[in-house]
Image (cartoon, rainbow, N blue to C red; front, side, top):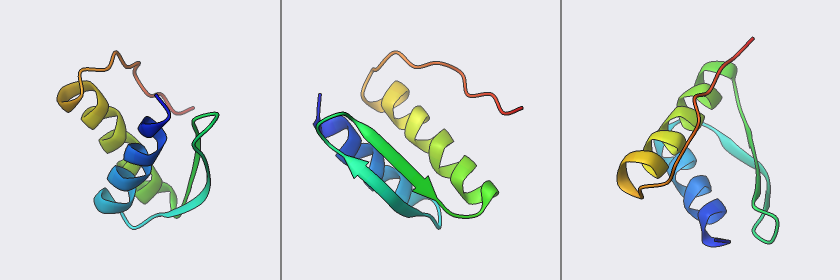
Length: 64
């Protein structure tokens, strides 16, 4: 649902020192900016929240 990107942005901002570079609630696009460790923390927390609290099916995050 379109609300998911708004929830993801909220969780990201509350979990790490990051900024929202871009958010499109119609397409569900979210760009999180900040230093690498903070962005990684924010993304991990968003994925955890969607999986554990909202019951979404999520995938593992890998960095190469």
